[in-house]
Every structure is written in C-alpha cells, then in structure tokens.
Length: 149
Image (cartoon, rainbow, N blue to C red; front, side):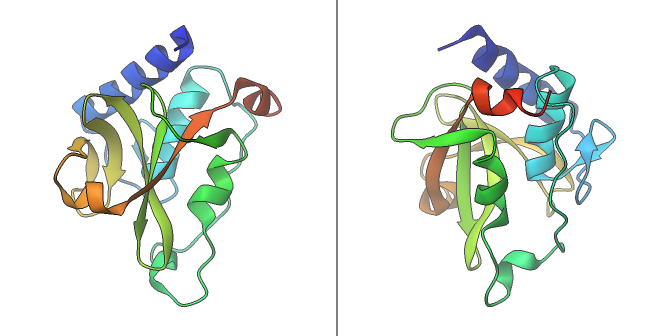
C-alpha cells in the first residue's frame, strides 16, 4: 500500500469527521456528493486539477435506461480490483446501476457523502445495507490520474 493511499484515506476521513455538507455535483469542502468527495480530496492532494465531472441529474440512477455514470467516471482514474486496501473506492448499487461510492478506511469503515444524511460521514460495510449493495472495488491508478494534473 502506498503512502498516497493512506494520505487519501486520511483526508477522506477528515472530510467525513468534519461533516462536509452534501451538495449535488459539489467537489469542495463547501459541499460535495459521493463522487465529488473523491474528486475533491484528490484535487486537494494535487492529484487531479483538470478533472471535470460529467453532469447528471440528482435522481439519474432510478430511471430506466440510466447509465452507470459513477463507474464510468471512476474508471477514468482507477481500475477494478478483487482485493481491497485502504484508500480504495467502494462502489455501491442503488436503483438500476452503480450509483454510490465511498473511500475504504480500513476494517469495515468507509467515508462517503449521502444526500439523506445531508453531509459526509463514516459508514460501516459489515452486516448492513451497504454490504448487500457493494458491487466492486476500484483502486486509484496514479498513471491514469496523471492525465488530469
């Protein structure tokens, strides 16, 4: 595990502990959604300065024909893996496609931003609704991220 993964996970944890407000399409400490948490932390750490999120409606994931925007966006900067390490991204399915993401912090914890809670928080993936909805793990790829610096 690289020092960057630890740094990334610690910064995501800080945003969750600080309870950064939920803001659809937000990517800063003033407010972020789940994907915005990932992009915002990476931006703050200087890893992706030129990255632009694809615009999507708040409830895009529940409509028929919805595309898998979350996975599509995250695969621009990472790759699916079969194991999990601190700093990896947990991808969750709600509705018709993968529609939520969080940062694995170790143990069973992950940092994420959820609209119904209205802020970033730490979730538990063991024996919870999150466990049933976990569909994959994406590991950040520094070579892929380099194209956005």
